[in-house]
Image 1 (cartoon, rainbow, N blue to C red):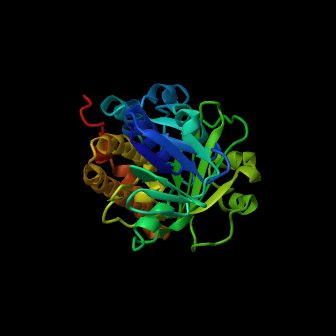
Image 2 (image 1 turned 180 degrees about the horizontal axis):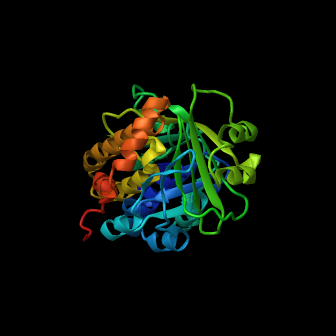
Image 3 (image 1 turned 120 degrees about the vertical axis):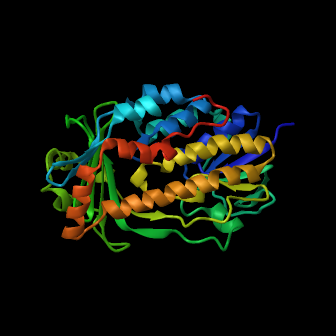
Length: 372
């Protein structure tokens, strides 16, 4: 008889984990609180380590087909002067390609890789116990394994780890949107100002994914399109053009948080994956990438009945990457004029080979027993 896995959360972490378990013979149910597995979100960078994980899950090829690969990128100041270029060719030659994909596209690919009967929408989880009982409304489900893949405010984490630390505000808020139609903008990248950033990249259909951040107090109003345009409207081209293309209905605005390191990702029959385990700021573009790594390692370890091995392998690495991302965010969000001036001078003087070396511990990951 196959073992039963209950996955709480139908995002990237949950779907990818379900694929890994299903491919290893598990009977999997993915419980999603929303009434449907909706295609939401904006753009997403998948670095070589994430594509290696997707290859292991059997969907890497189709993700590459529906992505933009190895686009030119770098960092500029708010006037458009280059501070650094990312040597994408060197990254590709050493570690593999970088893919830019719409989050909805990735979710669609992951859902399609699972039998439809695995996907249960409109199911709210009220409680979870470490022995694998999941309470949904007036019924209980029993799993040999329960995965908390339910994000930053994880119900599973709060139920099984009631003393776990609360998410902490990073000090800046974020906007994200995709232009409703294709826009010709040339090379993408980020622009860093004084406590503010704006980035953009072209998706496979020609539309442009845009994102921005600003230092504000937690919970500050200002997510509306008019305020957003006022904040970044005088930045360099093509940012004003991209702001004109923004649609109020598609503009996403969220304060950014990370999760302090947890003492463990496993307890009894329960394990945490993705943001439920290690929510991090987006400065390294590794949030989804780490969730995909989780999925691969979790499936292997759970099949071997060794969740402790999953925790031992994933927790130190995810903690390291989360801390790196937070450090980059502090530098990127510097606000005082003297600090920004020094930062920009250092960036201009730093060779791209140094960045490549610094990224090696992050990008070099491959599934165990995979040849380089």
